Image 1 (tube, helix red, strand yellow):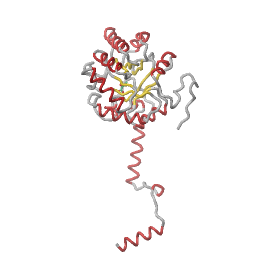
Image 2 (cartoon, rainbow, N blue to C red):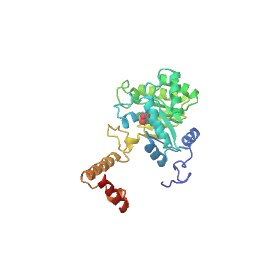
Image 3 (cartoon, helix red, strand yellow):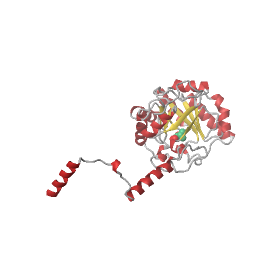
Image 4 (cartoon, rainbow, N blue to C red):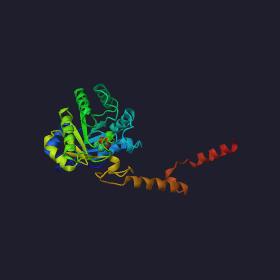
Length: 299
Ligand code: KIV
């Protein structure tokens, strides 16, 4: 286990280990101008890595549909699949706040559907909060979930669940009119009681213009430097996912290459009979081995 600086050491030190991140801690970070770090995780080991790295928020994103379940988009993933991923991530976490992404089709129909799905994320997977996408009808759903006692994170700009309607996986809000729609969605979600917002793939100018109007933490992904925090998808930032990477992805590792190297070496060792070596096996006392051989000879 690596040593982490004590709380208060350094201006933007990671949170003290074991101290859960609360909603008021996030507001405090925004007020103090301390950048908020969010990363996705979809299982026990990735959550443990996020915990050890000292991030503030872990999102079990529906991006897991693509990065760990192999679907071509986020649309097909089911609530049950997301709950399994979220429950596994929960088991790897102590300090970061755990946010579960409500998948496409699990909250749009009615406030009752939205509350029931959000409750499953809290009760069955142990999430602290949920996230939903878009403004429009999602604003009322967000307000209903908040009123039921579950914190909600909104998500505006590029919303992958409805990417087809947005013209594909492309940045949003590049004209003043379309930027105003994104701004209105963000302000409506704030008014609905969301505790934080994700801004995805929007021009930096849009973000900078609206930030003075937003009182809740804004976490950006391809939204420029003026947000209160940043999020990246675990498999993108570590170079595990081999699908298309958006312009905003910065690679901090090439873990997929390292995994392929390791498995390739293992396969070669097995084929060349270099593995296992004596230290990888178990032994019998020589007299027991001799007794076994004579038993087999007499069998
Ligand atoms: O699903 C996801 O990973 C997300 C992040 C990109 C914010 O929604």
